[in-house]
Image 1: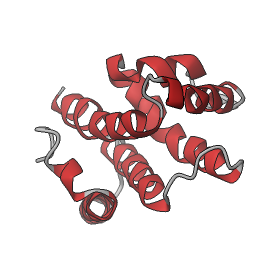
Image 2 (image 1 turned 135 degrees about the vertical axis):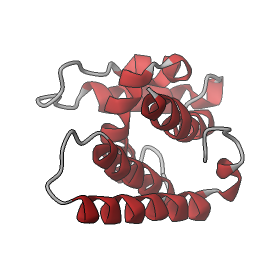
Image 3 (image 1 turned 180 degrees about the horizontal axis):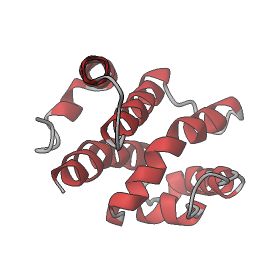
Length: 151
């Protein structure tokens, strides 16, 4: 239960809110960005997922996501942002993309059900936490202060 609250509803939600508020939040100037985001998301293949994410849902309602929405989003967001950048729709910084990549690595490590070598697992976990913290500090040091879930 704590993992869900600390990771999905804490760190991932804070990064999601910073991403969405900065680029896709409602407003006339950002409507074009939301439409582009929805088109990219709707055009993706969801072969390994039990449920897909709808583009308009991500663009308009990510502030009301639940934990399982964030689990899917953390895996997809690096691809989404890179696609938007490559197609010149929006120039997302590699620093923001790196935050999402590191979140993806950490979330996969934390949700492993078993591992064969505890020392290796905890070494990778510690390195992943440090990499995420560094990525967030490089992207926006104030993001660490904007959520009470950063421990």
